[in-house]
Length: 336
Image 1 (tube, helix red, strand yellow):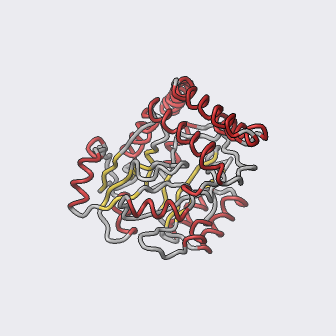
Image 2 (spheres, rainbow, N blue to C red; image 1 turned 60 degrees about the vertical axis):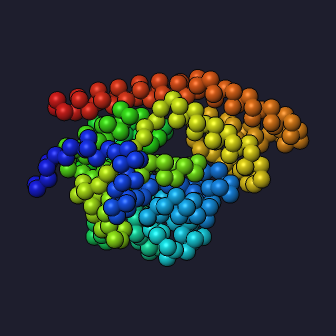
Image 3 (cartoon, one colour; image 1 turned 60 degrees about the horizontal axis):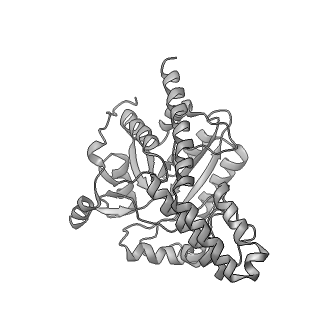
């Protein structure tokens, strides 16, 4: 453990929306620090998910700091402008360092400008050097978060035993709404063990901005984030459950079959999630486009399948198997 750091007990940091409302009346600020817009490759190009729509939604629900963290792009800020009220520039950057990390990491970076973004992208995409990437962030005093530490891309060999070592390099770890409770508990344990901050985020790709969030004091974003780093914050969390996953799948069906029909630009859209990409392919069928009634029937059938809970249950079962393997590898690493 780093010198001067003490283990933190995060049990009291997880609070209800009702308690959060009381704190906000006392001047605490809130933010959802992981949100995707249509500028991300894996977000449907529909109006509700456009940066302007999500920005207006964030203002409406009372977010004190608004940030969009699209995959390896700052396009949202080119669309919105860089100095909108409450807007904090952000990006989710993929860093693959095969030698040091062994797998790809997703890192949220905030308060960067265009020049810093392009320099970071060069380190990530050309140098593939995680340590250099983080040294740059610290040298430029840019806030950053280790996103979903126990999530691994399908085409990369997972290396769960490296996560504790990697977590030491970050000031804040992410409690992600789209992860199982068991994975979020592992992240909480790392934050407690190494004296790291913890932030709750939606990581939404479907417009559910602000469903969970982080609370801290701060007259500006730097102070807000600094308090998160110090553990002087609260989180309003939620974990991936069967009910939440069914609801999310139904939202995607609505986006794909209803709202995307108003924007035909989904020809090249892919998420990498087999079930969602299958629905996109079905919705693009020439037969469905020629026969609106058949389109509605297909949409109703997919709703019915989703509402049985079978796809959600299958996914959660596969994730629980992965969690057991992660726990096993971490325990083996501890015994070395």
